[in-house]
Length: 121
Image 1 (cartoon, rainbow, N blue to C red):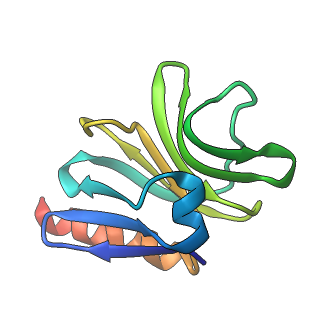
Image 2: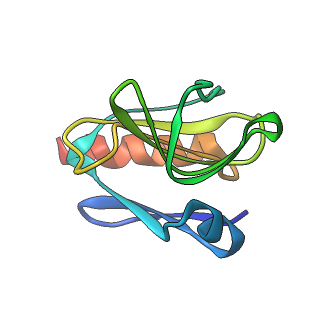
């Protein structure tokens, strides 16, 4: 997979590699822990009328990479299969309201994020 999660002291970074980076037109998304409102693992169906800004989408194949806008909210999507994804809701982030991505073992990644957020409270 072309995604890695890096946990820093004050922020989490989703780093994109290889072809994933190329199609998303972005190398990384940084999320300060204080902007993370919720983290969970679930399936996600991108709304049909999302605007790609910029990014790549091949909806029949469930491939979404990059920035998208829907209902006046910004999403960063990075996945290529219909499987459980890490879904992060943000509040006060400089751009995104949601960051949704595919990664190996999404449950443990989400658990680690919640643990780090709790440790800051």
